[in-house]
Structure formats: structure tokens, C-alpha cells
Image (tube, rainbow, N blue to C red; front, side, top):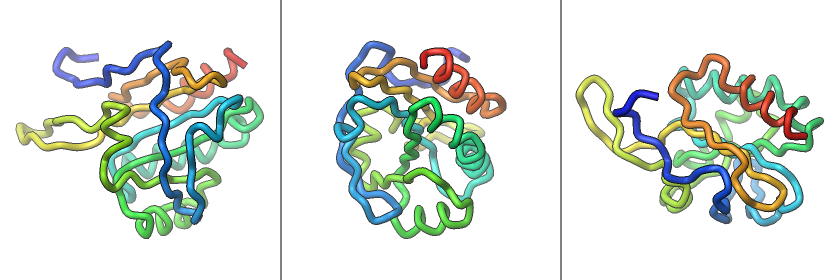
Length: 162
């Protein structure tokens, strides 16, 4: 990873910050409800952008393999529930998209940080994926700098630790 690329301070072995967030499907999700099950929690910047669409579509393509490995997929960003609902329907996503409109969960996972593109700095979500173990601790953390091969790498890790 380039030295100037920000990344989360959370690392493998840390306890995953708990949260309660609404999902695009009308349900409320609590991370603690998944205790005893592994969770892939992926933070992505925005619905309906090219890279974020590709990332969600790739997780959807492999959803059955993640489920067979006993892993729940969950996507999070700060978009509204209405935007998530349209995005999830457009891609036929088989996993929940949670909205973190106030940014509290993004802050707890340390993915809401200053970013820089073409010399312009702004606050945004760092594309980051977390594998949370059955005990609620982080097993792996992937700061995503290149999407190519990322979902396959996450799935391989889930299968090798199954």
C-alpha cells in the first residue's frame, strides 16, 4: 500500500465495534445478532458509482459461496435508505445494505477519513472490508486500493479459515 494511502487503525484481533443500523430491506441490523457467525462487513463510498457497483455485483456473484462458508455479507455506506433500496433492487443484491447516514459506524470503524483525488481533499469512506469472526473479533482487515481480485481474496480467506 502506498505510504500516503490512509487506512483504518483497526486490525486483526480487535473487537469489532457493535452497531445498530437500518437496512434497505426494512429490517434493523445489530452486529451482536451475528455473534456465533462470521460476517464480511464491507464499507464502500457510494451507491451507483462504477467501482462501487462492480464491488457489490462481485460480492453478489459469490454470495452463495460466502453463505456456504457460513459467512454473512453486509454492505455499509452513508447513502440514504431510499438510495440503497433502489441500488439493491437494480443489482438484485442478496445481502443487506445498511445506511450510516450520521457516520457514527463509519467513524467507529475508522473508515471516514480525509481522502485526496487529483489534488482535491475531502472527507469520505475508505473502501475497506472486515472479516469478523464468530467471537466478534476482527479476523482480517482489507484496505481496498485495487478492486480487481479483492472479492476473490476475501472469499479465499473465508474458505481457508472455515
